[in-house]
Structures are given as C-alpha cells and as structure tokens.
Length: 270
Image 1 (spheres, rainbow, N blue to C red):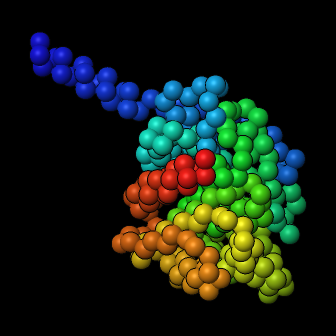
Image 2: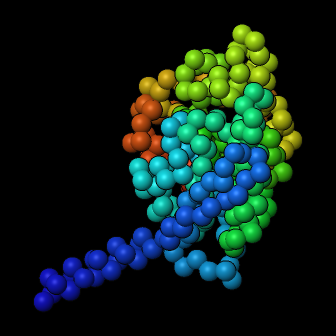
C-alpha cells in the first residue's frame, strides 16, 4: 500500500509540474498568401486576471509551428518561468523577411506585427516591449533578429540559437534566392539584410540581447562576426559558444538558458 501511495504521489507531482496548456490558433494575414497556425503554450494556472510576458520562438528552415514543441521540452519553460510561449509559422523557408522579389512573402511583418497583435488581443499579455522577447533557431535565429530590428518598439529582448546571420555565405542553399533574389543581380538585397549590417539600429534602444551557437555549427563564423560587431558598437549582450552542432539536442539545451535570460530581464523591467 505504501508503495502504491508513493507511485500515485509521484504521478500527481509529475502532472502538476507539467500543467502547461497547448493551444493551436489560426492567425489571419494580409501580408502573406495564407492564414497560418501558431502554437501557444500557456503556463500552469493561466488566467485572464493576470497578465503574462510573452516569448516568441521561431522555427528553422523546413520547420513549422509544431516542431519546437515536438522536438524539445520548451513547453515546460512556460511553467518554470510563468510566461506565454508563442511558436509562429514561418512557412518552411521564407526566412522571416519582407521579400523584395517574392510577392506577399512578408513574414517579417507577419510575425512582427500581425502575430503580436493577435496574441495581445486574444491572450492575457503584458503588451509592452520590455515584456516581449523573440528568439529562434537557425533560420529562426536570423529571423528573430531581423524581425526585432525592424520592430524596435515591439521587442525589448532578442535572442538567437545557431542563427544564420550572413545569408550570402549560403546563398545557394535553403531557398534563400527565392526570397532574397539572385545575388549577382541584387547584392544589396543581401548585404542590407545581413544582421551585422543592421546592428547599428540597436544603439540607444535599450534592447537585451543573447546569442548562442555551438562551436561545431556551420553558422559559427557569422555568430562570431556579429559578436565582434556588437562589441565594436559597445552594445551589451550575452554571447555563448559551447560544444555542439546544428542539432535538436543543442537547441533543447540552449533554449533553457535563453528562457532564464529573458525571465530575468522581464523581472528587472517591472
């Protein structure tokens, strides 16, 4: 009987420790060809009498709004830090830019404006920049910076994990030319959208920044270049390299550190 009681108590404790709620929502868009779904993770005890900070987490190339939840323990972070986590749709390979060559492929505006407006309207959020963060992996790491740099009054906290910050280094891969254009014909489309070339926008904006990349990742050089650029601009930021590559194991670990970083910034801004 004692053994059974211990088992039941353990199961109840486990359930209580992971009491987050998963919602799937449809978000209309005037800036992209289709409306899109998003995963919204609500913390244990979520109620509309309380407002919550929000962390937007973007998927990488070939992913969708489900992959972060399917491949990592990110949902637990909503409970641990008492925040709402939103996993938007980036439509496989659109790189979270407003494309100068692909009609209505405006995923920078979709995520940075339409998704945020929907979440603030339909959920109990702290609708101010100091209580919003955006991060992502790979294509989504690039996207988090690109979206935030073009919506500086919306996001007060920016992160990236394994971000591909210099698209022209891989211009023949991952559908990049479909949204950036032919590099030989439109080099400024690429150069202007390299994150290091936009980083000056962060000066005097009081934005909290965290960057993480594995030393075995094929994007490590562009992460180091951005780190150096931010140092040159004298912009405070957290920068982490650790053993690991471009894998879900790495991203599952890294997101836990970034969520703690964001939570600390949310709390200090109250």
